Length: 355
Image (tube, rainbow, N blue to C red; front, side, top):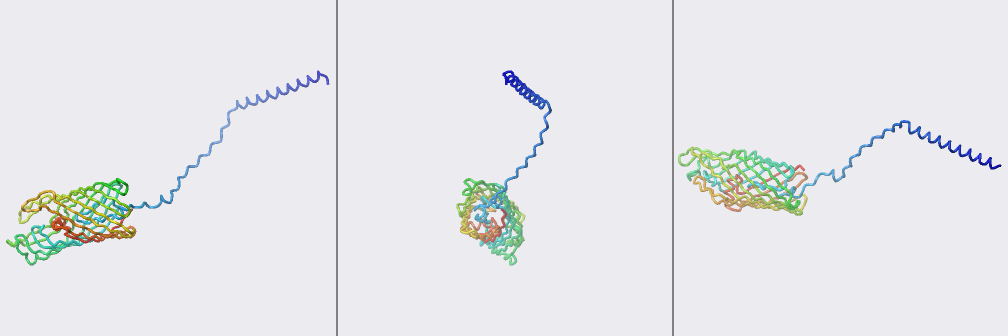
């Protein structure tokens, strides 16, 4: 092979390579000039499923020790609770007083059976409560009527059926140190709705009068403190009890009933050694803080103190309370007549809680 033939072959190879490169460039330009084909639509993403709640989240919230094993309130006036479950209850109570001289129109003794329905509704930091004593059966034994003489035979022993005083209240409390310390305030009223009436013949002229047991419109603002330490609970109330009229009429003369103000104090402690059993004791005191020297209605320096031991039994959402309230001072007898709760009382309460 001569050098001329070798050069010719190399030249033909270079020309062929150049032609292949040019055709490749033309193909790329044609592709760029053509419109882009639409991309296939993306499949919609599957919505995320919410996380399944844990088994603990599905379990009902546990009630606190303080709202489960609280010392039970008893009328005299009743304790306000720092933490209460939503509940309904039925009360049956027996109260007695050996001295009715606070009535002024008569002297003697008496006892009373009381039946009431009540409840409380817990809404976050608020508790709204009410109680309706729908039946009272009161029996009195009269030893003297106004003027100091003995009563007529038909007046000596009487029994009356009546509606009681309705109670309505609200409580606001917040945790101050978890369940160990809870504090707040309460305001309660007691409406003069009771219908107890008795008739007596006066010794002076044998005229007949109708006498109502003292009844008042109550206003009761109270500071509340309480807590739980393990199975121990405690509640403290400090406030004012104001008893306000209305006035009455005796022998055609208006009797002005003065407003009486007491400092009302309660200290209660409880312990629940078992889930089904608890016990508590409460000390209540009421001291008159205003002076009432009305000759028609003398109420002066009343000092009342009482103690209330109690047992509580728990059966699921049902609670049974057995409460005894025992007067400790002579003032407790006088005050018990004004409050219409007697010197001492014994209460059976059945409560259904709703957690």
